[in-house]
Length: 268
Image 1 (cartoon, rainbow, N blue to C red):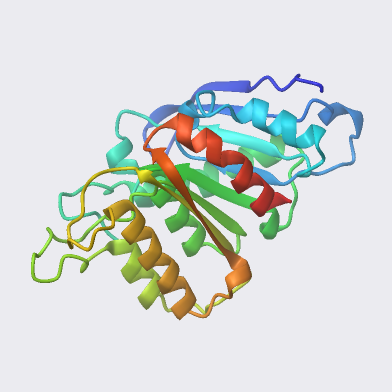
Image 2 (spheres, rainbow, N blue to C red; image 1 turned 135 degrees about the horizontal axis):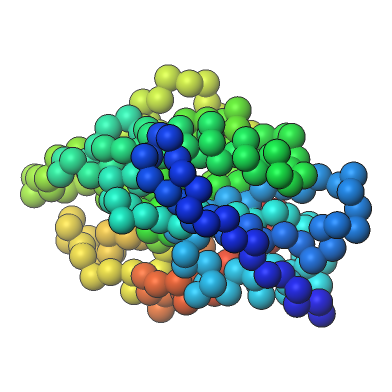
């Protein structure tokens, strides 16, 4: 097996939308230069700083060797010190004001990062070949951007997503109310369903909170409720996938173990 995937590092690129410098890692297939006419799907990740701990390079090498997935260009955007402000939902911040820079982060992805990547590397020109994924709050951000821009992205990957993101504090009389992403899926005026696909992972040890006291931790409850919202919008079963990991915790090691399932479903 060829194990030649070494991330190309883009360091301290200034963003005019975020008014800060960002670090980005680009994982090219080892044979990228062998076929100068070939274009590749894009696999974009939030929280790119966690990809080494999640063993992304080794997972890609293994799946390429097994011919389980096509070769892709994977890109990890490192989170900055303002992660809780840049990640979130474009429509509104949460009730504590977090996610207030989510629109600017979306603009960075669409108008700065993607054009730069397309200028430098041979990416597919088809939206269905663009996948955006993330971990925890980065998963919420990726899902929100994918949902808002079906003309750009064909699929989302959400690992232990922060789907509890709320517009108001928990009301004990209705503890599952006011989750922002669920409301976006329910109320979005754009035509649905479309061809987009959605993959979710949650671990049984992601957390211990159970705000509605139904015996199911919130990380799983929130994910299952979002799956139901997607089905209510008309998305068929083949466009939605859920992977519940027994013993899975909220860390890159768990997400790395889930990575082959995600890649084979979204790419294979």
